[in-house]
Length: 101
Image (spheres, rainbow, N blue to C red):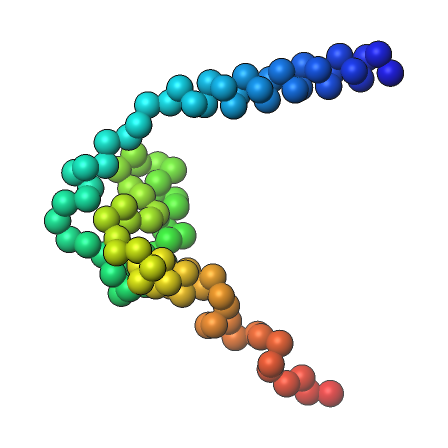
């Protein structure tokens, strides 16, 4: 039991250190992103459709993002959610499909 207590203490100290040092991160300047075109519902819809490809591109390149910073808020978020299939409206095998017995 004494061995587990020391492992728990070290784990707790590690988590506390991670939380404390994560607050030292520098802010990312996004002022340049917030100028120009503001994406709305249809921009969010398109970004939702291409989100899987954006995710792969984001892993490879630094200048690719999945979610547009310069958006109009709720309209963009709703379009992104629908475009990414977040609610499953476009799924073909829903529970409402009748089974042939």
